[in-house]
Length: 266
Image (cartoon, rainbow, N blue to C red):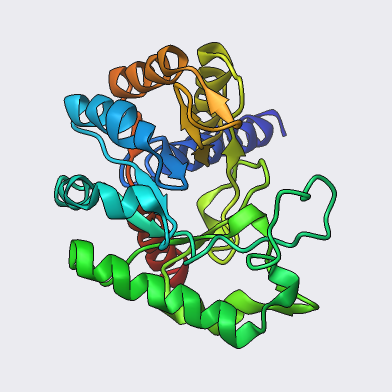
């Protein structure tokens, strides 16, 4: 009986160790995946963020609003960013949001999602895809819901687009294992006035739990009311680079395609 118990407990230990070993390398051979995403095509992304990421040879995802003046005025720089491996993601043509929700008094009548038909919303997203293709020549990119709004009345408009994007980024804070990720609503941590310690601790949690962590930034060193200081942002980047042997750092389009393939193979 005693020998049977010893063998049983040995079996449990070995099974647990094998499971942990498999989990540790599940993210493209790394313990976890971390994605840096930046919304709204801001000057600070070109001036502050991209030079920092390029200096370390890592890439992020920049969600572009099709009608953005900064896109038009600095088009060659966005084209260079894409050529250097950064993803230009689709953030719609006009960034429509539901103006009926609390704190949405800033939403104009023209960009109020409540006045949109599903056809119009889908068509404008497709137009933005065409625009971005003209800039970067790429046929695959992810989508980010403006203001995290997913419905027009009760219709989930993204359902019309599911086959046209590898994934869509949402705005709710959660880390997920590869098998649990819903590619139509990938969670993210929106960062506003947070310290590097806060952000690095999130990364450490992802490392410990072998999960996907997506950061959502707007302003980095200014230009947006949802802002993080450039110094704190860059400390996060330094930590990621110093721990690249454990962390897969990639644009969301690459991570989403990897997740889809892994989920389909199980």
